[in-house]
Amino acid sequence: MDYSGLVELAAKAREHAYAPYSKFRVGAALMVDSGNVYSGCNVENATYGATICAERAAVCAMVASGERKLVAIAVFSVAIPPATPCGICRQVLAEFAEDAVVIVATPSVQTEFSLAKLLPERFAFKDVP
Image (cartoon, rainbow, N blue to C red; front, side, top):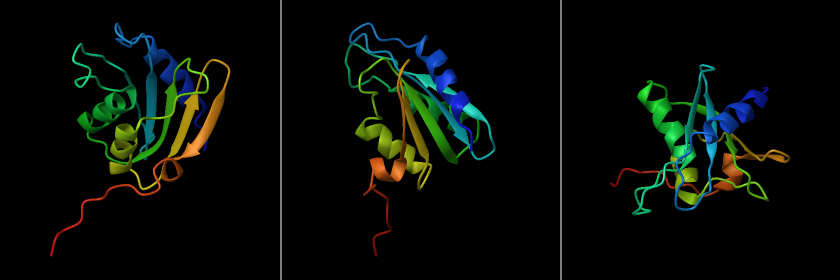
């Protein structure tokens, strides 16, 4: 499947990032099984713990729109090498996909991973007997 448009949308979302503390602006765009696309950017907070990453912002937009099945996500920054999703974001993405295409990109580099490779032993809630 062609996910090339996701990188462009992630780059556009990055333009709206609120990163006055780290200056590290990130955009994300994800596609769900219906073909719809949702984007997000990082939003920092002075307490840092309240900061939300671009990937989770995109997931929140997806969920708020009633969607639940992630198939691909692009993450755009200017970091070299390209920044992969943090551990919390990987777990949040895994909540909505057993596996998904994860594209990390900069203006000059683009790399593709599988979510299962980035998070091989994801946490999954299991009923306690």
